[in-house]
Amino acid sequence: MTAPTPALTTAAGRAGRTPRRRGLGTASLAAAVLLAAAAPVAGAAPKALPPDTRFTPLTASVMTEPTPFEATDGRTRLSYELLATNALSSRAQVRLDRVDVQDARTHRVIGSLSGEDLAAAANPVGDPLPGADAYTPAPPPPEPTVLQGSQQWVIWLDFVLDGGQPVPEVVEHHFAGTILGPSGEAPFEETVQATPLGRTAPLDLAAPVAPGAWFASESCCGNTHHRRGFAPINGRFFVPQRFAIDWYRVGEQGETWAGDPTLLDSYLSYRQPVLAAAGGRVVEVQDGVPDNTPPITPPVPPIQDTTGNHVTVEVAPGRFLLYGHLRPGSLRVREGDCVEPGQELGLIGNSGNSTTPHLHFQVMTTPEFFPTDSPPFTFREFHVLGQVEPRLWDDNLGIQPTGVLPITPSPYEGPHRAEYPLDREVLRF
Image 1 (cartoon, helix red, strand yellow):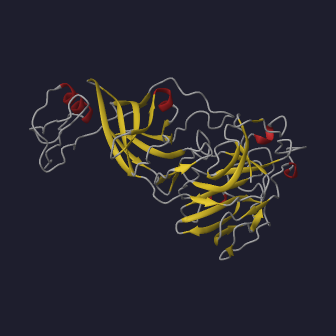
Image 2 (cartoon, helix red, strand yellow):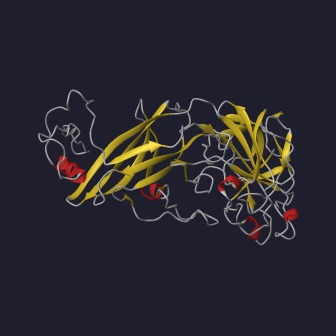
C-alpha cells in the first residue's frame, strides 16, 4: 500500500497541501511539481512532518568536511564539492540558475554562483570541464547549466569569505532554477544539505623541500588536475588531491630546467632533497618504480604506482603527509621509523604518474592515496616572489621553448605565515 504523499512546494507556493489520492499514481514527479506551481494552495502540512517537508527536483550531498583555510591573499577560503542530482524522470530537465552557499543560522549568503560562473564550475559526473588539459582553462560555455533527467553533476565550490564576517559553523545550499518538463516550465527554489564546517584547524607545516625558490603548480583553487581530480574508487566518489601541490625548483634566472629537456638532470628539481614537513611515524614506503623519461607524458601507471616511489608519514590522528614521485633508490626511511621535522626522506624523482621531475605533496586522511580525502594545510613561513600567469604544469613544463618561467609581480609579494600558497605562485622557503 502506498503511503500518503507529502505536499509539493515551489517558489510559487510554499505552504502546499496533502494530495487526497494516495501516491503519485502514473503522474511523474515533474508533472506534480508543475501542477503545484500553478494551482492555488491551502491547508497545512501533515502534523507528523516538519512544515517544510516537500518534494525537491534536485538532491545534493557534499564529498568532504569543508574546512576554512587562510591563503596568501590574506583571506579565508572554502573549497569543496557539491554533488547535485536531478531526481526527476529522463523526460524532465532542470535548468539550474543559481547556487547560494548560506550561513545556516543567519541565511547570510557567503558565496554564490550563477550564469557563466556557474557554467564554469559545474559539469556532469564523468564529463570533465573543458580546459583541464590545456595550458590555460577554456572560456566558460555560454549555455545555461541544464541537468538532464536522472543526471548527476558535480559543482566545484571555491569561495573567498568576506573579511570581518564570522565564519559560519554550518552552511546550507540554496538552489534556484526552472523545471523544464513535458507539461511546461515551473520555477523552483530549494534549500538543501546543511553541512557543518570543519572545526579542526589545518595543519601548519614546515617546508617539504630544501631552502630556495620553488614554483607551486596545480595548487588550489581553479580548474587544475589536483583541484578537479574527480575519482570513482571502490564504489564511491573522491577528490583525493584537492589541495595537493607540485613543487619545482626555480633557479636564479627563473629557470626550472636548462639544456636538454629530455634529460632528467636538466631539471633543477631532480635529486633535490625531500624533507619531513612535520614529525611523525612512517606508515608507508614504496620504492623500485623507475623514473620516466621527460618530457613526454607516460602511460597511466597501475593504480598502486600512481604516486610512484613515495613516503607517507602519520603526523596526527587521521592526518598523513604524502611525498610522491621520488627517485628510485633514494628513500632514507622505512615503515615504522619516526622522523623529525626537516629530516631528509629521499630525493625528488620522476616516478609514477609524472612527466617532469617534481615533488607531489599533500595532506591525506588515510595512509593510502587511493582512496583518501584531501584537507587543506598551511606553511609556517615563506616569502612570495611572484606569480606565473600561463598554466605551466607537469605535462607541459618540459615542452616550452625554454625552461624559464614567465614570472610577473604578485600583489602578495613578501613574507607570509600560516598560509596556503595559491596556484602558480613562486615563493622562497
